Image (cartoon, rainbow, N blue to C red; front, side, top):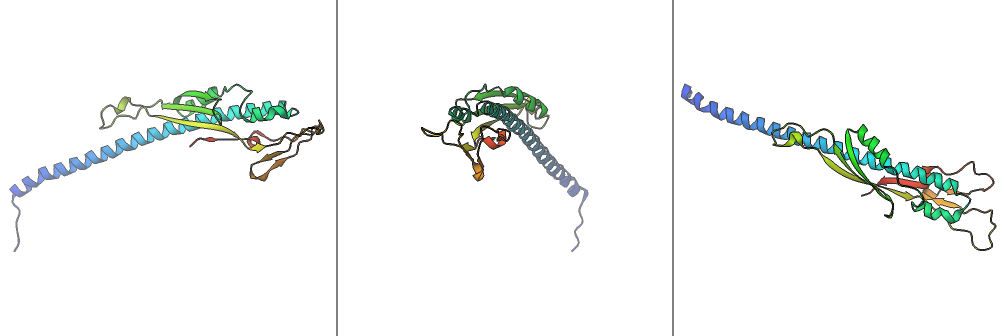
Length: 201
């Protein structure tokens, strides 16, 4: 039996259709808002990671320079490998990297921690943006990161009676060894050979 819909049936269905479409649009806008917020947070985390690593790399290079200056005095090596003897001034570099990632940072050197490094809190310059969620237009994402500097090499100081011109052998990660000749110091380890810089867990 064929059923014919009257105009009254169509009229009753129209508000339901509008309600369903309105609900779907609301879900779409909600997903967009979540996506905007996630992208903003990712930007803040990227800025924090890059800034912390840049600060730590800057100090790693200074520690390497200090080691090279004192290469003939191995009694100073361990302090240098532990992060002592240089000013932890890498926050200027952190600020530069944050600006390149459209963010600002609060950078805190951590020279007394083991291993030493930097803690950075990054805030995006751009807000989350307009969305159906109230207040997001003025909200900025903030994330933090910590980068540390760890020595990659070990050594043993020469014992009593050892020749004064003999330098300790550096035994580094991956089985790499450096035999240093005090009369020929043209081939010395590079910063990345001596120190590992990475984000802390």
